[in-house]
Amino acid sequence: MIATHPEVDTILSVPPAPRTHVTIRGLTKSFAGAPLYTNFNLDLPRGKIVSIFGPNGCGKSTLMNMVAGLIPLDAGEILFDGKSLADTTIGYVFQNYRDALFPWLSAYDNIAYPLRRGGMKEAEVKARVDELIALFEIRFDLKRYPYELSGGQQQTVCIMRALAPRPEVMFLDEPFSALDFEMTLFIREKLQEAHQATGVTMVIVSHDLEDAVFLADQILLLTRRPTRIAEIVPFDLPRPRTPESVSDPRFVSVKARTLEVFRREMAA
Ligand SMILES: Nc1ncnc2c1ncn2[C@@H]1O[C@H](COP(=O)(O)OP(=O)(O)O)[C@@H](O)[C@H]1O
Ligand SMILES: [Mg+2]
Image (cartoon, rainbow, N blue to C red; front, side, top):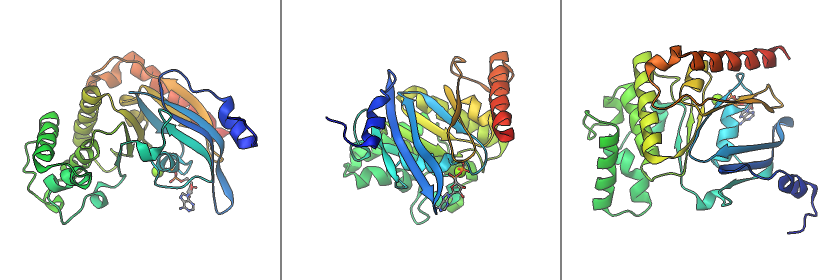
C-alpha cells in the first residue's frame, strides 16, 4: 500500500509490538469540539490483562468503548490481530450490572442469549452454559430472574454472558465499582480463573488503585484530557494471585509506582 494521506503515514509508522492482539493507531476523538484523544497509539498484548487507570473523566470508558465498537472514532484505526471488529468476537461487561441484564429473561436465558442469537443449537447452548456453571462454581438457581439475585450474582451472570461466545477480547468497565468487598474478592478470583482457563485478552477499566493492580499484567496510566499515555507499568507477580497478594512487596511497590505517576499527572 502506498501511503498518500498523513493519517495513513502515522498509522504505518508505528509497527505493532510482538504478541500484540489489539492495535490502536491514530485514534482521534473530540466531544463538542473539545479534543479527548489526538493521534493516540496503543498496543494491547495477546492473552494478558490490561487495567486502564487514570483521573475521573480522562476518557477510560470512552477509550474502551471505542475499541469495543460502541462509540465511533473521529479518525484512526483499531485492528484485532489485523482483523476488523466485525470479524472478531468480543465480550463486554457494562459498568452498571443493574441495567445490563435483560430483566425479562432468567439468568440462564441471559447467559444463553448471545449463543442463541448466534444461531447455536439448544444442546450446544446447554453444554456451553454448563461449562460456565462449572467454571464459576455456580450454586444459585439460574432459572431465577435478575431482580431475584444479589448484586454479586447479577455481576457473575453478566461476566458469564460475556464469556459465553468464547470472546477473543473481553472488556470490563469498572466491574467492581458497585460490589461490596466480599463480592469484589469473589469476582476478582472468578475473573482470574476465567482468564487462566481461556487465555482471553482482558481490558479492565478501574478507578480503584488496588483493583487496577490486582489482576493486571500491565497498568495503563492515562493523563488528564487531552489524554495521552502517562506510563505503562508492568506487573508480573505470578498467578494465581490471592487476597494475600496485596501485601506482597512486589504488589506494594507496583501500587506505589502507579500512585506516584497518578499524583504526578494530577499535579501537571
Ligand atoms: N457522549 C458524550 N458527550 C459529550 N462528552 C462526553 C461524552 N462521553 C464522554 N464525554 C466526556 O469525555 C470525557 C471522558 O469521559 P469518560 O470516558 O466517561 O471518562 P472516564 O471513564 O475516564 O471517567 C469526559 O470529560 C466526559 O465528560
Ligand atoms: Mg468511566
